Length: 214
Image (cartoon, rainbow, N blue to C red; front, side):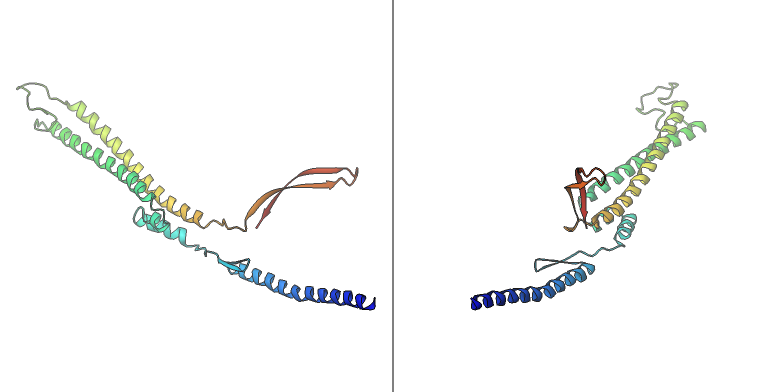
């Protein structure tokens, strides 16, 4: 009987000693996890995962590159699919500006020459089939109206081009910010049921709790 009791006491002490030996190890692992986490390293089941460092200057660089050359900031952010869109939008706006500016110059030149008394502008006889004394194809009022119309459209497309250029810079900056948004596995959100007792009536209260873990 004494031998059996001695055996159980020995096993109990060995179990306690074994637990005491593992506690410092667990503390060391927890301390290691904490220190590594501060340095941006995550320890997961003996697998070390290195977090990608955050570059606070990346958004500024992306915006600067897009300001120097539209689309370059998108390339810096590795959003290559945006480059054709950037050049399509800015290039299309710039083309519309140049096209309207060309027509404005043509009508303005014809208007000024018509006011000076000349009849050799391109809008006086566009098909070269007017007989002597026939009225011009575009009279002075039409030339003035067309000149003002194309001037107005030209100025509008200039504003659109500038806005698209600025939007290209803003997109590169915001995209660089979003790329550095923390979405690692340490972030989690969950709903958990809870119950507590009313201190006055001692009746249970049930509800749901939103738990956010960092």
